[in-house]
Image (cartoon, rainbow, N blue to C red):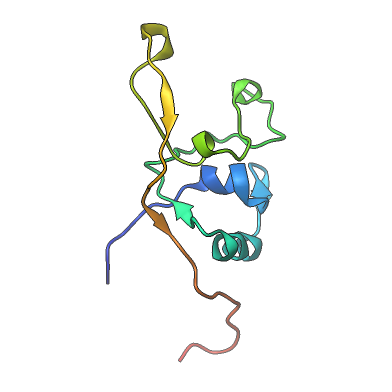
Amino acid sequence: QGVDINLSVQHVLNCGNAGSCHGGDAGPTYQWIKGNPDGLVFDTCNNYLACSAESTEGFCGHVDTTCKKENVCRTCSTFTAKGGFCVDIDYFPNATVAEHGEVQGEAR
């Protein structure tokens, strides 16, 4: 039940220190989301680029993946070649985690 949402993998790659494009671990990801007061943004705020800090393949060497406001959530007016620009968004949809952990044993 509830509304399906898609969360931003790129936000985790940019800021979460919980993995890279070469793999990661759900535990540190949930821990980061729990400790991040802004939560994890929706993917409409920060689309997946398949680039992380150590990535150099394709266009990744030309992409800024540092954790700063414009790399958490932003909107762009149009293409830069047409005079467009991007700005960070201060208030954005997000998800938070109150608690997390592992489940073991038989399902009940």
